[in-house]
Length: 400
Image (cartoon, rainbow, N blue to C red; front, side, top):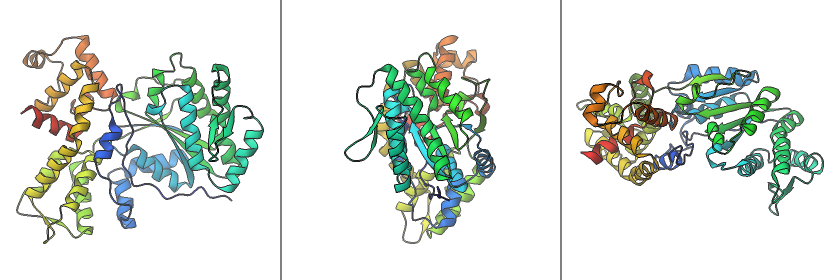
């Protein structure tokens, strides 16, 4: 039997954003990721830190050919969990970043690229060649480099036919090769920005229900749980919230211990660390890596090193945060700044609105909903706090 097994990535969740979804890809690039040379036991703990129940549920859903929606803010580890779960069930992973799909043609191109990267064995290539000579004839071709590409300048009708054939190809390959595949659609709701009549989304959701060897995993922000429910084919939902301080503290201590570092017991080092990352997996990972780079000769991390690591991260991310704010509407920027400086679980209260000169009614509700949809703000269940702690810290420093 052909094996789909591949070693899982240790990268953090790094979905990109544009004006409707802020540039998280740059944000993720600004945060370092841990080296892939981590010991195996730490690599596993990195991928599953604080999420064993969610991980096990994802594995079970994928193992029975289930499809799911994973909701969480940027950096919560959505892709990391799916990749590891797919590796666990010996499934090959395809990924399409829907933020980069500005129209149907671009979506088809991105899916082609993912297929090229995932099904690259000689036997898979032979199957693709047969597919090109059969149902995909006249719709797709191979580039001089041997890459799968749609035929140039397809009109609307032929583009749709190409999409129908291409979305069925992972199922064909998985059946022929005797394995399974998992298709991750990052920032899936973004396709609605160009799929105005919902035709592409409707067809994708139909395929989700029909295909038996391919599991679909839709990644979205925490607000997407209720925005577009599919009554005919409800997806199982896995929601990732902030990690607890106890979970992060234990993990960080173990990670530092493995690299020969300890925290100064005479200073509130861990308290400062946890206050900066606020349960955010990606920011905790970045700050831990930065502390490893600032290693002292005695291996002891003191309050000064944590402060230095935080400041260096904020400096590296400053241009990204500036760009992010420039892409947001003014009402959302104002609300972000207010909540960073003066956190509250009741931003709609008359006192808070009056104190910060916020717009009343629909404008405020629109700003709250927009920031939640972009993954920049938690909802009422988390007290409307900023979802990216380093961004919150940067705003406070910038304004004070």
